[in-house]
Image (cartoon, rainbow, N blue to C red; front, side, top):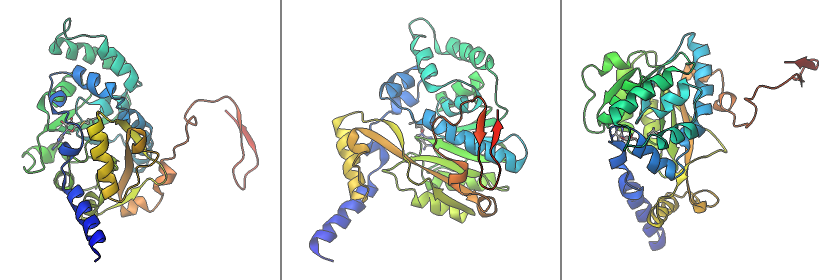
Length: 321
Ligand SMILES: C[S@@+](CC[C@H](N)C(=O)[O-])C[C@H]1O[C@@H](n2cnc3c(N)ncnc32)[C@H](O)[C@@H]1O
């Protein structure tokens, strides 16, 4: 190998060894507060938007899987934090509305326990999609908060990168149909995913992950393959996670991407972290439809419309409501 190629290869290897915490900004302190206000202040302040962009994708997958399995689903949210994905999947609220709500409930006037009770009533006042959501996170305060408000119906606390799941996890995880995550891969690797998959057992779940482009998904796809799941990446689309927190983070992330052979032009080069979307399914369930049949990014089509003309191939034009 010529010297320049050897140097490039060494650089890429070094880049893939850098842990997420040393490349991305460190948010550990806001993950471990007794309520989500600091989380929203800090991350929403950086235009963290991935749960909102993930929501229609998860909703399409939930619809498909409910149809296939013929019952309300059990979902596991890995890196669930304060249960934001769970709230967005169950209730007709959006991230913007939640962020504004917490900004208007200052710590100086309302303590965490009182806020949890207010949130409990708040979420209960909305119509709810029938689904059971279990959260898994290293942050005990975040999972406890989301359990108290009722957005999570179950919770598992711990860092399972190095430790086994707790003895009762098998009961909590049995029958999980769908594993979701936003903003968690990187902190969580194939080690946690493999432990979770083995605890879930049969029937195998689907795994739907939004993953920053700086974190190669191959090791997780390999662990999922071992567990009998085939992985597809949504082609042609990326999802903004948030803007860079600092010039240093911008520099570190773009150089890591370049070392991995990923061109940041037009995406991270514009100051925004981008995520890819991956769906893993058991072969027999993947055979009937491709990922792009289930998830299509067509903005506006989910609105309710007046009477419109439908012209499907091989059928006469119909006027439908
Ligand atoms: C960027 S937040 C994402 C939270 C949520 N999914 C969202 O998008 O709003 C990352 C979450 O991963 C959690 N986390 C970090 N390391 C973890 C680990 N080893 N196992 C489980 N969760 C972890 C943090 O506590 C935090 O709640």
